[in-house]
Amino acid sequence: MNAHEEIKNAKLIFWDFDGVIKDSVDVKTKAFMQLFESYGSTIVEKVKIHHEANGGMSRYKKIPLYMDWAEEPYDQDLLDCLYSKFSDLVLNSVIASPWVPGAEQYIRENTCQQDYVLVSATPDDELCIILEELDIYKHFSGIFGASLSKKNAIKKVLKERNIKSLDCIMVGDATADMEAAKENKVKFVLRKHSSNADVFNNSDVLTIENFNTL
Image (cartoon, rainbow, N blue to C red; front, top):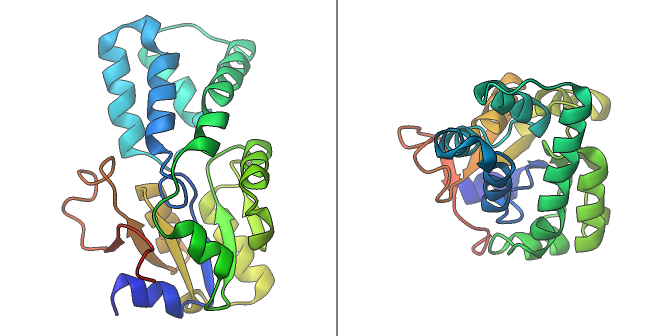
């Protein structure tokens, strides 16, 4: 089966958010770059490359790593300040970013009567605000943010709902999404876009660019 058929035939879809439902990957790329612009162009470029190659990694892991690269001493108070600033930079921009073509219609209409679970690296409270603002919160039977890894979120759903991994699919746009699916023996479909094309250039995973033909 091709990617479209795999998605439509699944009983449960695990959705990533940024880059899959909303075309918001560039929003977060720019926010990370802005957050570290005072440390010079070399650090900014390194941050940009790493973020685009690791889209599914939480900001709570990225920001301390980038501070280490900048050789800047930090404590928890400074990290909390940076997390808050990052959130301020991205929240409204993510909400205002364009939908991945066809995603909104597929989620709202749910013509295949599927179960939808959201697994994202975005902080839980921020994720809920975004979903409420977009009026799609009600379409997901489960919502998992950064407080639980994607691997463990999928594992939790499979166990609690007693559903077979073969009846599920994960639609993501990052290696972290692919690895989380693989560790739970869940099929994976890559939503391919300009920011991840190079990362998956030599991969043979099933791919989809939009949801218009579903």
